[in-house]
Image 1 (spheres, one colour):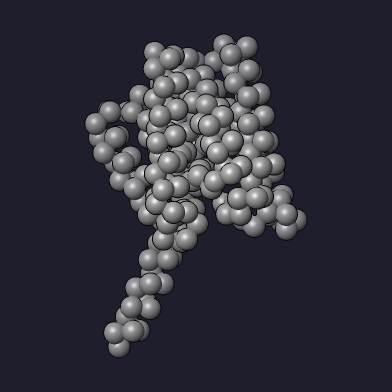
Image 2 (cartoon, rainbow, N blue to C red; image 1 turned 90 degrees about the vertical axis):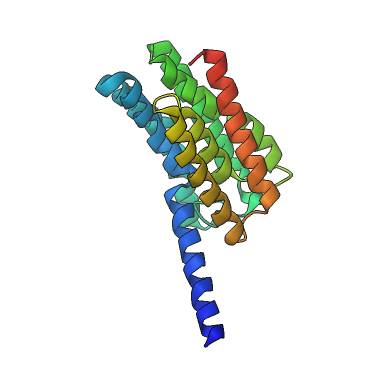
Amino acid sequence: MGDREAARDERATTVAAGWITGLFAPQVLVIGLPPAVGLLADGWPGAGWGLGASLLCGGVPAGVIMAGVRSGRLDSHHLVDRASRTKPLLVAVVAVLVTLVLLVFLGAPRLLVATVTAMLAALAVTVPITLGWKISFHAAVSAGTVVVLTRVLPAAPALVVGALVVAAVCWARVRLGHHTPAQVTAGVLVGAGTAWGTLAAFDA
């Protein structure tokens, strides 16, 4: 009976880790963050700017990854295999860079420009690292998202709730065997650090 209960608990935690990984996947956060920031900072016009940004810097890479999964070139939309990450991540870099140029050229709200710049800064650090070591993009993006949201939501509650979410994401990635504790810790430090540094540079 004890073995059955242990096996049931094992399956339950694995399922929970899978749900957390899916709900807070980098693609989900990158697509959802710009409209949320735009709406909270500048109302519906800001949300419109954010939606355009999310379609480019989040939707384009997500589409490329989905096509890769369907064709069998990629293992999953979580890019578990480090060797298969390079091309999708380079697409993400180009998409975010193009989005940033358009936002600046068209006069998008300052905080939204800062948010997309933070995404680019995180990619500038994580992409070279992942060529040799499997840093966690889930951890990096979730941590960066929390830092950005503290600029448009009450900082203390957002930080507390966000820290719990980031901790859950890190636990899920380790629980599924996709990352080590060091890899998720590095992701958190890079994501939070690049987001904080970028927002500070923008004085946003």
